[in-house]
Image (cartoon, rainbow, N blue to C red; front, top):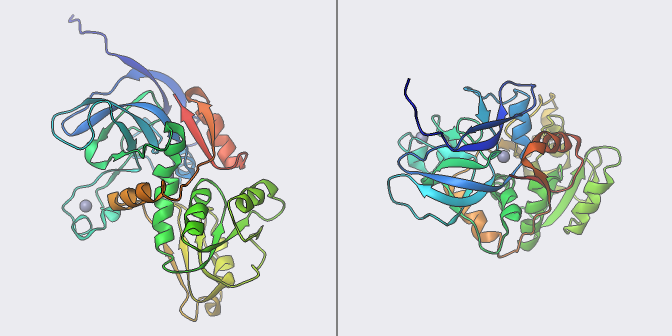
Length: 337
Ligand SMILES: [Zn+2]
Ligand SMILES: [Zn+2]
């Protein structure tokens, strides 16, 4: 029998199978390989994608897995190699965790579509733990004006949302369908850019979300089955609800675009061609590029975007996920190990 030094252990919440809650466990602190950083996690925001992973709507190919892909922490150790982030620096870890760098997408500025990409908290262990390891080339420096917890929602809700916002072009009258973590960040940026935000929430009384949207400068709020007072030039759908696509098309002016910002959506019902005609378009947004991240993290402090967060301890991540599903808070849920 050989004896090895006891590994340093950490607390983590582990995904084992779809439909099962994340399980609390003690696992070894990971070791950074070449080009990787060992990061002590200070905070990690919850994302709707985590619900899709949990429900099996987005597949985790090789469980068990530590979820969580909006991570802010401090670099504790660096594997071999050079990079901008050093020991002691604050690092942000987003959803895009690795790409091959050689495919037709990577070499044409579209690494978000890399067929071999690996994603944090899906293919690589993420931030619902005390430590994580990340490829340093895909980590971002965190803007100094943000606290750890406040910065986390910028890393996916903000960043992939920003990519969706960019796809609305010069549209001035913007509709947001679903007013959660992403929309609350984008509403501030859109307003700063001189646009008008029309916030659509769940049919029935979703007073809290509507009130929140008005606080952040929405010019109109209403249920998603209601027509806005003016035709929209673009709409972003954040809610994973397919019937919102024809609803948003009906609210669009000619030439307008509907952008679907989520990774998963229920089926889109069939609709008459006339609501797409007049050069309206429907498109989706997938993942992010590092360029998106650099741009959003430069813009956010200028606005300045203020994030609204609700914190949960690591052991309560299942409660945070349940609250997200129920729409029980406004803004973003953040796990603090
Ligand atoms: Zn996300
Ligand atoms: Zn690639």
